[in-house]
Amino acid sequence: MQKLNQTPNIVLAEIITIGDEILYGQVVDTNSAFMGTELGKIGIKVKQITSVSDDAAHIVQALDAARTRADVILITGGLGPTKDDLTKTTLAAYFNVGLKLDEQSLADVTEIFKKYGRELTELNRQQAFLPENCLPVRNILGTAPGMWFEVDNKIMVSMPGVPFEMKTMMTDIVLPRLQQHFGLPKINHKVIMTIGIGESFLAEKIASWEDQLPPHIKLAYLPKLGSVRLRLTGLDTGTDDLETEMQAEVDKLSELIPEYIFAYGEVSLPEAISNLLKEHYLTIATAESCTGGMVAQKLTSIPGSSAYFKGGIVAYDNAVKVEQLGVSEATLETFGAVSEETVSEMAQNVRQLLKTDIGIATSGIAGPIGGTPEKPVGTIWIAYTDAHQTVAKKLNFNRTRELNMEFTTMNVLNLVRQSLPEAFRIG
Image (cartoon, rainbow, N blue to C red; front, side, top):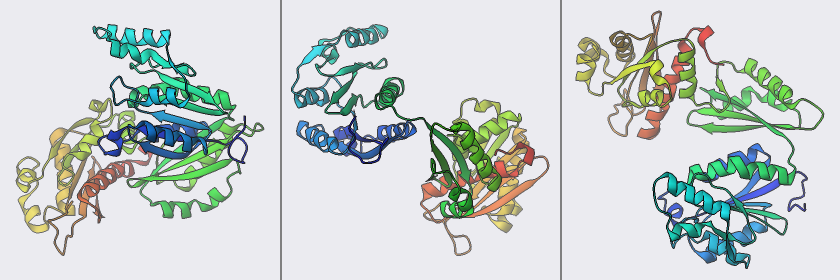
């Protein structure tokens, strides 16, 4: 197959999202992020992401432009049964073909309506009519089938904009078909999750290791909210065991920065802490002031959290710190709510009150008001306690209120990982 680009074995893709709601900001485009990630895993590079309105002329312009720079064009949105859903009819007109009934698509739509005890309307029946030159892509979760086109050595795939429908279609059908069509080489990924060190400092620390990576193994730095995801991508050369080779590189990295690694693979910090607590049959309780319950929310967002999370107290007001948590009035008067002494008592007392192995606490000035010259906005204390120790740490952030709360939450969860005995730690 003739490629647009000069480098062999590189397939370029463009993603086109269709819908006024995306341009107006009423819907966040998560589809493109998912598709870009999954395409990268099989060795297809996204060249551009374009969003267009529900307008036939705009869709055609986007398609014409995409065909000049990409081998694969993935389209989402505009496949519903209403008048503003123009994608299917626009594609039929674009290729100068008519629509014909696809029996499998009709059976799928009929089954969905039958499942929910609803009568199939003519409007929904029309969704089973597809452009004559397309290969139907089954949608087992919705009423709008996808469409696969092969024209002038280009692949164009139109899929629903509903994320869970699109993701299933991509994973089950589109990605395997793209791999087969282009004869893509095996791509392997290894992800190492780090926290507690900035991207530039991390890069400096592992520079010698990165410099000696084989040419067919590349490293990407992907920072997000106080953590940095390191992604190794290996291209199978056909001569070595790629999996073994890449794992050896991960092992070398683990020896270089063990204190910063909290997980391997696509694992969030709350998931990693959850796994750690469940693995060692540990329980935890939270006492929160400046984070307003965010720490508890992160811990309980993980399925099975009842095994380790016993409860939490949001002690925003000092009276609650005293009356519910049992913080000493003398401590508050002498040191203030935002202090090592107060946050330590909060962690110790919530652990005792809820009878857990671990207690953690936060207290600070999230902003944008409430700061003083001695304790400016962004001054935050966090604490960890167990049966053997209490560890408190001062943080200084200069961000928005929301980010101060988010960073505090991630830091106190990381403090759990750092403070547990070494035998329990992740990484």
